[in-house]
Length: 259
Ligand SMILES: NC(=O)c1ccc[n+]([C@@H]2O[C@H](COP(=O)([O-])OP(=O)(O)OC[C@H]3O[C@@H](n4cnc5c(N)ncnc54)[C@H](O)[C@@H]3O)[C@@H](O)[C@H]2O)c1
Image 1 (cartoon, protein in one colour):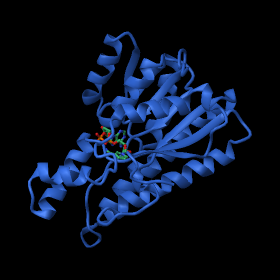
Image 2 (cartoon, protein in one colour):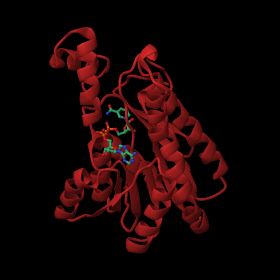
Image 3 (spheres, helix red, strand yellow):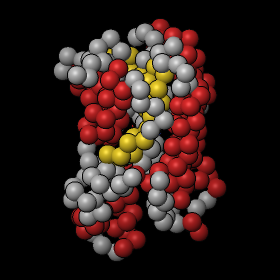
Image 4 (cartoon, protein in one colour):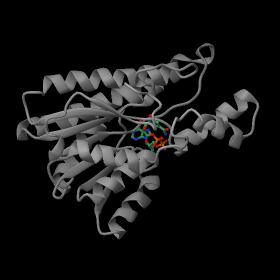
């Protein structure tokens, strides 16, 4: 049985979409959740829902691209909730941008949030985990972490990087009781994906519903995944049951990518 009672979990980008699902599922297994999001107002309803259903959650303002924000987050969470046992580096952004329309600014924005943001938050959380010789880090990758797709070169590059970061830190901490793994979701109908479907509809000159149907048609199982699907996988990786699993990346994608 997965049991996260007494554990403190930080979920970056935990206010919306997949992060909200992860926060709710981890809370359901007993963890106390620090929702670390750049938009605390939008994240508050997720914390309210968890607290209303008997769990415990609190929202912290955190920009994953900001070094000081990460260290302030760790200080606040550890003094208010307790030592951080679980870090879920979930925050991420994406837009469809063909290479010849890609600006340096857009490239840096996506790489900074999706990849450097995982480094910065992990860098701030890890001293405490290392001192306690205990911890779980789960990084958000993607089905496009191992197979690039056109018009998303910045996004795919950031997600390939997440796998490299995950394996590297897993190896660095393999002699401790800290594990580092990644999850690779496929297609989930979150606010992030709604925006991409709009862009795909415009590019193919079709309506939103047609673009959505075509997109979901890429999933062998024929339907999108849910934030809760991802949350259950992360709950397993964050639990004592997964003590000997590290440096891995697990697909939750309805069969899109079969290793
Ligand atoms: N939706 C999908 O189909 C899909 C598939 C594979 C992987 N992913 C990955 O899952 C993660 C979550 O995606 P989503 O679809 O839930 O996105 P979303 O846009 O629905 O939610 C993203 C969350 O991250 C927060 N955020 C954005 N920038 C931030 C920053 N600088 N610091 C802290 N928080 C920030 C937002 O406020 C929001 O709460 C991302 O890493 C994404 O790449 C999504």
